[in-house]
Image (cartoon, rainbow, N blue to C red):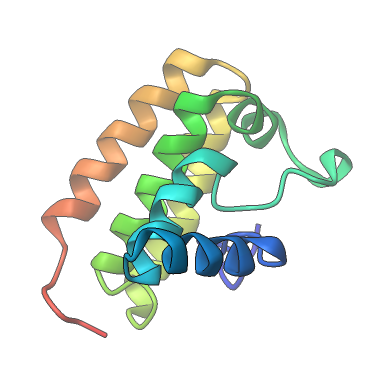
Length: 129
């Protein structure tokens, strides 16, 4: 998985749906999008299962792992991952040497995600964008 796609949510209907919901419920669009994102899957597309490894396939099939993947994506960008090249390289290394080593072992993946979340939350910077 390349870093450019990491953390992106499927586009398409999500923006339209969240905009319509925002109009009807009177909320700003961003919190509504976060609510919808928490229900739709991980931070990457699960559509083409031929290109996903065992860890990614397991994440696609588990609501708990999908939610953790979205939380990790948010924590990564809260830690300025979108502008910090060193953090980006560290994230790619974590994916290859920790997450993917778990393969389809859900308990291993949950542990790996929780540990990584703790690391990223410790690096979070206020208003880094």
